[in-house]
Every structure is written in structure tokens, then in C-alpha cells.
Image (cartoon, rainbow, N blue to C red):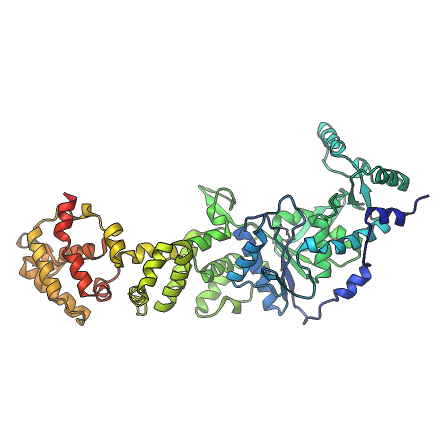
Length: 558
Ligand code: GLU
């Protein structure tokens, strides 16, 4: 008669620890009452979804506001799906968005915290310890079913139109004798370890989800794989063991896991542990025509965290926006606490949308405009340059050529009463400031075609010449405009639109026509920030050079 422990030793050799050793190594956390221990547990599969950042933000916020702990655990036991560099992308993104974990990896080769290692592939001995214990207690067993046999089971179930899976009578290794297991082992057959599920599909499991409320789901009766043939655990087993040892109190994760809760509760029970609380976050959605759907990794560029970086949304804007999605009470709080950090808001997980928050690009844009609008000129310059250095090197080189000039440009309508809000994201910068730089301006901003069909060209040219000759950088805005009006009037243009409209036949046009042309000549655009401010920043010589260009442009365009 072969003993159970002999078999367990053969199935999982070299188990170094006992569960008790590990309990000593990872003692219960001494935290104040009510402190939440949360975690973010991504699988490094290469794409960092905005929904992941959203989940991390919620988890981080809940831990911080309760004086708890937020840790990062890299769930890399599925070696087939792992992509190199994917974990670093998460680590760096969390850092960028200020969601630095209290424990876990915080940078290349850096790990903090007493409950590590925080990468599952480095915890294999820990998983073996507990799976070994389940084998001893006959709560788990070895399964040598071949892929062909499993396929056969699947197709038989399909034929009989019954529930697929490895359970009940279909669990062909569940009740094998120790001798059969030993023989299979001796024959060198590959195997997995499965949970011997005590569940009954006809029974219901009740649990209270932090977001979705009371839920009732069928019990799990599948003998799921807990240890794969490569010796690594499955997600289900690994995260249960980790969340227990790492002292997680609140699991916040995507709602694709909600149907696995009965299984997870069963695993906690099999190990003899109290499960944490669960909150399942519905995926962020978007409108597609008239219907809602999940943000899709394939279809929607905004599904990727990197998109926000590339577009140049300031991190505060992204976080602020996600807070709006996370808690329906945030927006009102923000209206009453304009200058506070989002940290001062108390996030209430029960206010998180059950059906899935709707992504609203316009809302993100308006938050982002406010964030950029609240920066002073130097901050705008520094943050804009930081973005451009990575994503628009040509712009970065223009901006860094003359930092003071660049800062003056960015200060137009900035440190003033009515702040400019034309920059939504840093990728708008090129359009908003490029024309201030001569080489850029002559190459990209000016379109000779816009200077066609100008009536009374000679008059206008003379007026513009007079205007620049008499231009004085120290004139205030009223003086500046007054001069322009006089010149306009001297050349047969009304001093205001009103005067022109009263007697249109008396004038060639009005002062606005001249101002419009000046704007076009200086900026290449029909609309711009305040022209008086633009001229002060550009300086007289540059303005003169651009204004003298009219004739050439008219010729070029004809
Ligand atoms: N690694 C799992 C995932 O990326 C984590 C789920 C969880 O947070 O428990 O979906």
C-alpha cells in the first residue's frame, strides 16, 4: 500500500517549508483598525489597459485614505502570455501617475516590503508548500489526463449538450488509487494537480460584493488545475495563497473575475483561511454609435495607458478624470474644493458604477485644459518641453533654443485674469506655439493661398507699413489699438465695425479687416490669442519682417 505522503513527495519533491514556517515568515500585519490592504496584480502581457490604471487608482486610494497598505504583485505564472518589458511598463506607469506602491517592485531591480517576493514566479516554493498540504489532506490530486483525453471529454460533453469541464464523473483522475498514480509517475507521464472540489453546482453561494452588492452564484464543482505541469500554479491558486500571506483585506479587480468568486471562496476554505472582501469593477465603456461597449484594446487607442502619455494629457488630468469615473460623488466635491488634492476626497467604493463608467473624451479634455491652464508660464514650459523631448523632438528643439522667448509665448494670456485655455494636451503645443518660431512659421504656418483676393492691396500695405513703423512695444493695449484705428481711418477704413455698418459705402472696410490681415501675417492663422500680446512677445523686428511679407505672399499665391 502506497501512502498518501509518499505520493505527495513524488508529486511535489523538495518542499522546503511547512505552512507554519510561512506563517511565521509572513506574520499578520499590525495595522490600525479599518486599514485596508489592497493590491494591484497585473499579468505582464504587454498592454497596460486604462482599466488597469483605474483599478490601481481605486486600490491605492482606498489603502492610503485608511492608513493601510497598497502593494503591487506581478502575476507572471502564465509564461506563454508573458511579454518582456510588460512589468516595467506597469511599474513606470504607476510611478508616473503617483500610484507608487508601498510594497512590491518600484523600479528595475528594486523591491520593497516584508511580504515578498512580489513576483509570482519567484514564489514557487511557497505555492508548492500549500499545494503539498492540500495533497496530504486529500483536497487535491494528481491528474494525468492527456490532451487527447481532455479533448475527448469536451467533445462528448458537447455531443450530450451538457456543461463542459472537468467535474463529477468527468473528473477521470479524481478517484484513482495511489498505486495508479504511482504507476503513472513511474511511467514518466506529465501531470497537473487539481483541486478536489467539494462543491455542488445545484447549491448557491452568497457573498456581498463591495461594488455590486449581494450576489448569489452557483457553487463551483470543477476540479480546476491549481498546479500546472510546468510546476507553476494557476492564477486561481496563486492569488489566493498570496492574498492570504500578504494580508490583503480588499481585492479590487476587473469584473471578469466575478464568476470565479465561488471557486476562490472554495480555495480559501480548502486552505482554512478567511477570504478577503471582493469588489468587482465594471470595465470602462464608450459609446459606439448609439450603443455602449467596453473600451477595446484592439479598436480604441484610448484603451492604452500609453495613449495618454503620447497625447500629452498631464498625469493630474488623467487621475482627476479617473476619480470622476470611480466615484459619482467626486464631481460635486471637486466643485466645492477647487484647490484641494484628490487625496483629500474620501473615495467610497460603493459609489463606483456597477454597470461600467462611460469614457467621455470631452470631459477628460476639459479637465486637462483646466490643469494646463492652472500652470504658470515656467511650469507650462517645463512640462511641455518634457513631453516634447520624448514625443516631438523638433518642437523640443525649437522650445529649448530660447527658453525665455518660449516662456513669454506660453505666458500670453496665462498669468492673467482670463487665462487661456487653448491647450488641452501637450500634443496641441506645436499648433499653438509653432508659429512664433521663424523657421517653423515660414515653412509650416503661412499659406500664400490665404492672401488672395485682398481688395485695396496698396492701401492696406501702406497702412500696415505705417502701423509697424509707429509700433512701440511699450504702448499699452489701448494705445496700440488707438494707433491702429487712426491709421485705418487715414486710409479710408472705418474705426469700428459699427461705424462701417452705418455707412458701408463710405469706407473701403473697417479696422477689423486690417487687424485680420495683420493677424494672418503674424501668425498664419485667422484666430489667435490677443494680437497686442503676441506682438509684444514677438518683438518689433520679427513683426516687421513678417508684415513686410505681404507682397511676396500675394505674388506667390497668384
Ligand atoms: N492577474 C489578474 C489579472 O490581471 C489579477 C486579477 C486580480 O486582481 O485578482 O486580471
